[in-house]
Amino acid sequence: MWRMIPAATSSAGPFAAIGDVVGTIWTNAVTPVEAPPQLMVLGMCAVALVVVLFRPLWHVTRHVITIAHEASHGLGALFTGRKLEGIRLHSDTSGLTVSRGKPRGPGMVITAFVGYVGPGLIGLGAAWLLKLGYAVGLLWLLVVLLALLLLQIRNWFGLWSILVSGTALVFVTWFLEPAVQSAVAYAVTWFLLLGAVRPVFELQVQRSRGRARTSDADMLARLTGVPGLFWVAMFLLVTLGALALGGAWILGVAL
Image (cartoon, rainbow, N blue to C red):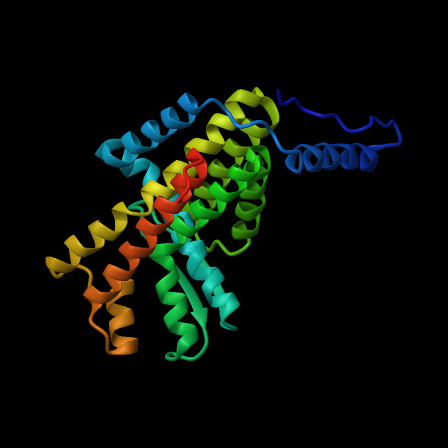
C-alpha cells in the first residue's frame, strides 16, 4: 500500500519549509507504488473511452489533447534548433504554435509532423512510467511540464487552460488518497492514448470537405511534395501504434 512519505520537518524558516515541501514531492514522485487492481485499470480505460466518444464530453476534454498537440509542436521546434516564439490555445479547441527558422527543411517537417502524434507519444511515455510503478511521479511530471509550457503561452484562454489543468493535477497529487491518485494517473494516460486517435479522423473529415487547407498534413504536403493523405495515414499509424503498445504496457500484455 502506497502512502505519502513526509519530509523531515523544520522550524528554520520559510526557505526550510519550502525545502520540506519540495523534498516531500520528490520523495513521493520517485517512490514506486504497487500496481492497482486490473479491474480499476480497465475501468479507467472505459471512462477514458466514453469521454473520447461522447461528443459533449469530448468537446470539453479535447482541450487537453490540444495542449499536448501544441506542446509537441513547441518541443519539435526547440529540438530542431528553431526559435519558439509562443503558443496560443483557443476556446474552439484549436491552437497555434509560432516558431522562427528556415521555412523549409527537416526542422520544419519534424515540427509540423509531431503535433498530431504528440499526444499519443506523451501517452506512451506515461504508460511506460505506469509500467515502472511511478503513478504519482507521472502526475508531478505533468505538473512540471505544464509549468514550463506556461512560459510560452501568449493568450488569456491558453493561460486559463494551463492554470486549470495544472491546479487540478496539484490538487490530486497533494490532497487526495493514493488510490484516487493512481486512478487519475491511469485515466489521464488512457485518455492521451485514446484521445490522440480521434483528432486524426476529424482532420481527414475536414480535409475531405475542403476545410483544412492549412492543416499540419497539408503543410507537410507543401513542404515535402508528398500528398497530405499520406501524412494523415502516418499520424494514424503512430497514434494507433502508441495506443497498442501503451495499452499493452499498462495491462501487462506481452506483444
